[in-house]
Image (cartoon, rainbow, N blue to C red; front, top):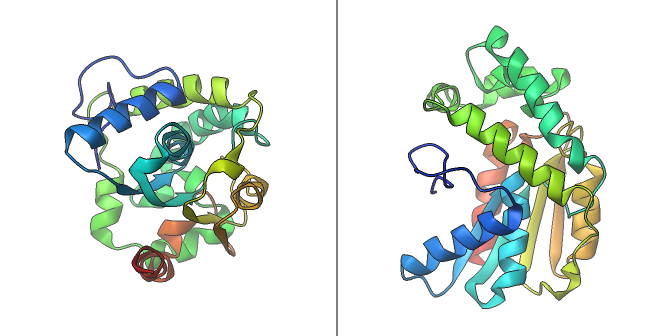
Length: 217
């Protein structure tokens, strides 16, 4: 993984559009000398991954898109507001990934506590200085642009795609994942029950081997 500009250990001001984040990722991938890669995009990362596949289709072999949706999808323009509200509440629920309630609806908290290793819980709640502010700025600017847009012609994406989400995603409403899978001609869809935006974390014991099988096919 790499940190987007202005996030984590990367310098500079955060990108202000999904397109710019995609351009940065393409530049990073090619600078590393990779002719073709598999992309795993979670949430806003899934929107970036779609844009990369549209901009540079030969660079992408397969994609896994989790907790995400197409441009112009239902509720996407409200992502930043939902994230800001839930992140403000998060510290009251430490420790663990359920510290950010947007990832796990109340019904899924027991599963998240039982299913995610302690090391992952600790890592999840250690943002670098300024990381959360930068994430919120990036999410806000990206969502403002991608939310109201018309959906891209995703039918031109011919790569195999695995689309994954929980059945109660508050941040990027679950119908977006179903819509995304319908728009992508070579996709398969997995919706985890009793799970939210972070369904891949709650169901990591199923998701990880499923993802590896998908990539190995």
